[in-house]
Image (cartoon, rainbow, N blue to C red; front, side, top):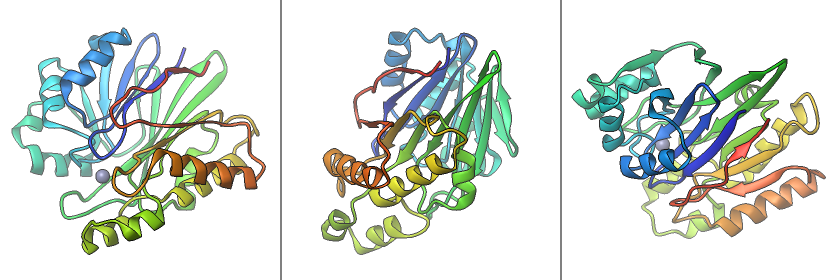
Length: 272
Ligand SMILES: [Zn+2]
C-alpha cells in the first residue's frame, strides 16, 4: 500500500501526506495545525508513525502552529540543512526545540526513500528550496511520487529527478495574461515571473510532457495534480484548460488530471 493525499495547496497553505502500513510523511505543513490534525484523524493516520519534510521555509509551507504540534508530539522534522538555517532565522526556539533532522543527501524514513533536488525559488526571506521524489518498494516493484512546487523554472536535472513518477504534484501557479493584468505590485509580478519565483501553467504542462516522454514506460505517470494555483493570477479552469490543450497537442490522454484545492482535501490515491 502506498497512499497519497493533498490536504491543501496554495499560497494560504500547502500540505500533503503520503503513507504506507509502517510510515507516514507530511510533505510541507503550511496550514494551521487544527486542520492538519483533523484530516490525519479522518484518514486514520497515527501520529506515532508520522514525520514531516519541508521544501522551504516560506510560511505557506511551514506554519508556527504546526511547528508546535510537531514539537509536542516529538514528530521529526526533515529539512535541507540550508532550509533549516532559514527556519531558525524565522522561527528561532520554535524550531530549535523540534526533533530536527537536517539532510544534505538522500535519506530514508522507515520504508520510504526520499530523494531531493534543488529548485529555483528564493527571495529576501528564504535562501533555499527543494523538491522531492518519494519511493516505496512493494515486492519487487518500486512506486514513485514526485513533488515539485515553488520553482521559477524547470531544468533538465529536475526533469531527470521526476521521471518514472506514478503520481506527480507540480506547481501550475499563474496564467501569464492574468498576471500581466493583475493589481499586484510590479516588484511582486517581476519576482513571480523570474527564474526564482513561480511556474506558469504553460511551463508546468511542458514539464509534464517531458517527464512522461523520458519515463521508462508510457503508462507509468498515472496521476498529475496541478498545485499551488494562485488566487490572484490564475483559476482552476484556466490551469486545467491550458494543461489539457498542451497534453492533447502531444497526444497524451492517459493521465488523470486533478487540480489541488486551496482549502479542501483532495482524493486519496492508492497507487499499488
Ligand atoms: Zn515559496
